[in-house]
Length: 224
Length: 378
Image (cartoon, chains in turn red, yellow):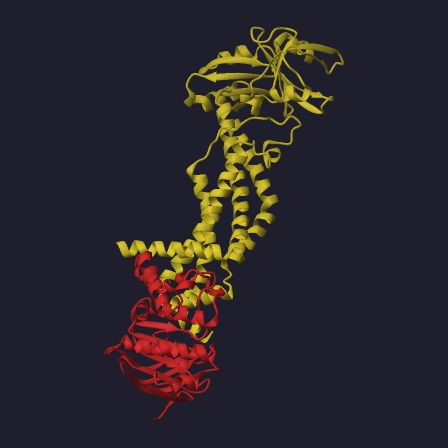
């Protein structure tokens, strides 16, 4: 489903503080499976996820999504792909304060021009599935960490994406909530979604919900 | 069409919610901008209305006024001038006018005395302007005395108070009969202060004025259009003075509003990153922020404009009137006829809404074109 060929990524290229975060990554991601990237801070996990999720471009190399090379596409097309095919769960959840849970969840659906009523109905369904229906109209800053994460998950699912990208999804959760997340993760694969996540939480990477663990260090993949 | 419309509704909806989420900042911005618009609109509306009022009132004044100059000073017109003027082709009507100034030490004000035919003002009576009547507490039937420049006391009965409609020009006016005027100022018979002329063909006013200058070299013809232009320049000059005086305050408010509008907080940058990461296009983010800027600046434009309109046309421009109307003791008190033109509104719009929207747009554009991956690293 996703193929990466010789992906290299540099920051501050050409400046005195040039830094290469990725050094020639070759990887193939299978559809409908959960792939976890494991590695210490600075190993390039998050950078790799931003490239896969069309949030940034590789400095060198090719990204193929469903057989199509998307590395050279203009920003507008990348945004379309990102909106239609990817759902993001960020480490800090990145919810917009002052908005209710539902209003946060429907945000990715707005640019496609879906009627608000449809979006809200779908958001309520997702919140019910995630056992947070009773908090749907609460402002997100009033929710607990676990509740905020479930709102972030619902937001990632609102456009029914094929791929879920989660960056350190359990970093801000306690053990019980991390286990809840793993249960949700299993639900994703049951629904046929492809999941890519980063984590150095053993609870996640050693879980049966994760089909493949890819080790990373210093911007390179560690051979299996 | 439907998804496009839905998308715009979503953007407006989100914009309104965003504005409400940053109430304090946005209310402060709105107040600052409303004040700027209010000041600029008040000045513009008031001076424009004054110009219109002056044009309206002066429309009935003589086409040409002839004054005699002696040693560069305005002097009396001697007997015989009227007859000589009557011989100039193109002059349709001529009328010798008598007027002069009188300083009233009681209220420290100058009045304009003007003679009218006995058919209009009977001997021993006067008609006075509204401001003068107010200042001296006069009503029809009251008597008032003035001491002439020769030291003689003259008593007059107030026959009428002039209509406030013409107060811009008649605020300090005292109309009296010709014989009373001549006795009061000791003007010899046949002499006049100036001569009012009307011209048969309005296209030939300048030609007739040139003939007058040639025939009577010691005279100075003053055209109605020149008087009007002088009024316009005077109001323009006063408007300029007020603008200069207020420039500092306006600039301070403008800088404050610009700073607030153009400075993106860390929270706002973060939100833009989130929106882009979850699938908003750069154009969606910019459009949403433009809506935000337009809502604030248009609301300020409307509020400031309406407040200025009410202030000028319903409360007599209490804030700026003393400066713009003049530094007289007898301020004309009159209700201005609302006079607003498209150019005024367009100018005000251009100097308020456009810069504000630009101030909002530039930093948003910068933030919106950055890669959304920063949000992953927050």
